[in-house]
Structures are given as structure tokens and as C-alpha cells.
Image (cartoon, rainbow over all chains, first blue to last red):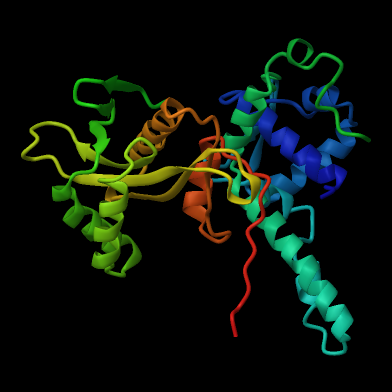
Length: 155
Length: 167
């Protein structure tokens, strides 16, 4: 499964914010770690802000904080802000679909169902455990925890 | 974090959440049936009696039917949850693994680490029995157990469950 760059950035940003609970993290800090422009990241944060997942804190030392519950918010909650995960299912209802088309869509729906179930079963807190198990310790000092920008998405 | 300590003398596991985990006994089965009925809204007395016969009495070196009970006086202790699993081997080429096929916690006692204690206890049993992999199966739309098993570090395995309607 391929995720759009915005989706990946949103997930990385949430992981950064939850790793630094209690303090604000600037878009520039996150952008530097993942090698993306602040402009692109700001747009992603804006979408998540509207969804209530993050909140911005203005002023000196300002930045973003995670506003959700890391043990309740899942990857699906973040992903579906940027991806249309229901497109195939909706298309399958088309009345003019051939049997071949319907059969193919049934298979693709199965794939989508599994993808949604997987994303919906992994909370941000669980993702943090996975990150920590892989030893990146993401979210701390970016230079210390991410040599060579291991987490950098392919942009 | 769930702190567990094995009480080898009593062959039970205790947690700091005031529960102890031990093997099931015959006297627990009515409580297990009651808990399962409250959770699933379907009484399955015959099924649970059969499960107890097979998993609570036979081949105990590879079958584990564990219950979590409140600590304190044994007379006051009651079942707060249970977990059942066994060592399965060579199903479609699978090397021996620990298979968990039932886990339930009293609804009002959830979020008190009882499920964690049960899963950790059966993990220890599996490890002691010589397997290094634990598996389970959860419905895709069963959000709570999925979130729980995921939070315990379980990931999708190499097997895909398939089914068909039998006409």
C-alpha cells in the first residue's frame, strides 16, 4: 500500500508530537528531521488542526501539540484525512459494472478492507512502541536519534 | 507497564493491579460461563464444560486455560477474566507456536491491565513450553481486541484466513 506524502508526513508529525508530550514542536523542527519544507508541513498540520488532532500554540516557543488521545487515535484516523479509502467500495455499487468488473472490485475491496482494518487497529501509542522497538527513539533530539535521516520519506 | 512475578509455589502469576493469574479449576467454570454470557450474550454451557475437560484437565504441558482472579482471601476471590491457548504444530507447515483462541475480561474491570496480565502469563507458559511465537485470530471489525493485541506488539502473520459459504 502506498501512502501519499502528506499522509506520511502527518503520521510522522503526530509521532514527533506524542514523543515530546507537554511541549510544543515547531513545523521547522519536524520539517528539518524529515527533510521537507515547512510550507508543505504547515498545510498538513492545518488539516490535522481542523480535525482536532493537533493544536497550535502561538508566541515565542510556540508550535504544535498533539490534541488527541494517543491510545485512542489510530493510523486510520490520521490517514483518512488525506486519503480516500472508500473509493473502490463506492465504485462497486455502479449499476453498469460488468461481471468481470464486479469480480475485480470484490478482490480490491478485500484488499481495502484489510488495509482499513490494519490502519484502524494501530493506535499512535502502539506506533510509538513500534518506533521505540526499532531503536530510533524518534522524537528526541533529531540529530541524535535519526542519523542520516532514517525516517525521511522519499520526497 | 504491567509488573508480573511468578509465584512458583502456587504456580500463579500476580500483578500490581490486584489480580493473580492461575490455572483454571472446576469451580471457576460457572464464573467463566457467566462472564462469557455477559460479554457475548450467548450462554454456551456445554461448550465451556467441554473446553474445561480438554484444556483444563488434559495435556496440560501444551494446553493452558488460565484465569485472573482478584487477590485477597481465596474465599472472596472471583474470576475477572480468562485466557485459553495451546501449542499447535504443523498446521499447513507452521512450526510449533502458541495459539490463543479465547480471551475475555469482565467489562467493568477492563483497562486495569487484567488482559495484559493474562496475555503475559500465557506467553510465559508458551515460552516455557519451548515455542517462540504466539498467534491469535481476531475479527477485522472487532476493534477493542484488535487494539489490545496490537498494543501488545502483535503484528499480522504470514497466514491469511480464508473461508467460503457451503451451499
